[in-house]
Length: 341
Image (cartoon, rainbow, N blue to C red; front, top):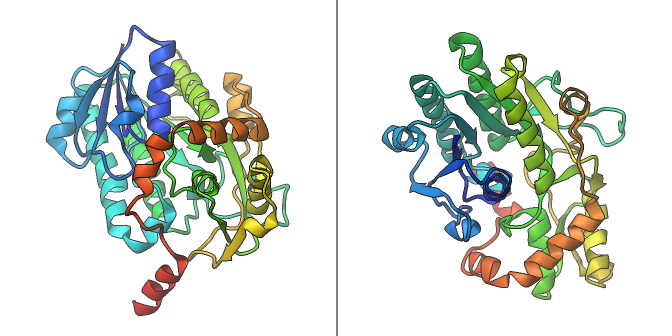
């Protein structure tokens, strides 16, 4: 089988390429990646694949990459909320227009399956005082940031191409992922790499916001279950599956776990302002994928966090160059931008 993986040099994409290559060594893997600040060819070092540098907004590059592909797994996206606040237009172009170009080519090439990777952020925010509420496949879309709005639009496009044109698709909406190869601007690797460098962790507000954490390997096994089932059973086509890690933590709880791993106390926390439109809580109900496909997350949050810390300690060569000369986004800058428009 030939599989095209867009954004395969990014965090989740590269982990998925490594997972797929190991489990299905006979498959031909093609990776299409623009190699932005968050995509690195080094992420796939030692993994057999065909690499094509290109933008999903470039129809000719997409046509070349998708030629004879049986399955398309679409990761390529601008994904950082803070960056979407500063440059929303970039997110609309890549996440909406880029997805549309991929869908058009998938129709022309008659691919067997187009799997779209999305986020729980399309559903908006849940109140922290209602632990009984969780996102599921029937939750109304209510995105609160330019990033989540652009991903919501791409979800709708994928679903529309299935309903209108009969394109065989599946969608997964996942909670916050963590693990190896995640860019140091994201919360967990930002805190880990900062602590390795002897810096305090910048915690927004009082760390009251809640996130459901899913180890990236668990996300990969979930997508594998969806893709494999969809190729065998047409009843799965057009379906959406929510994928969570069953690991809801406040940001303060996550911070304290990391501080414990580093043998640090609360004096290493530096409180900073909340970003604009900061969602209170994300929580995923994964009961559908568990019931229909028999998938379960296999990794414990605290144990996997220890492994993640170990990976960043062992791979400073990977993340240190990414932080050099790249200032992390300051919420104060976002506020100045909001006040100027």
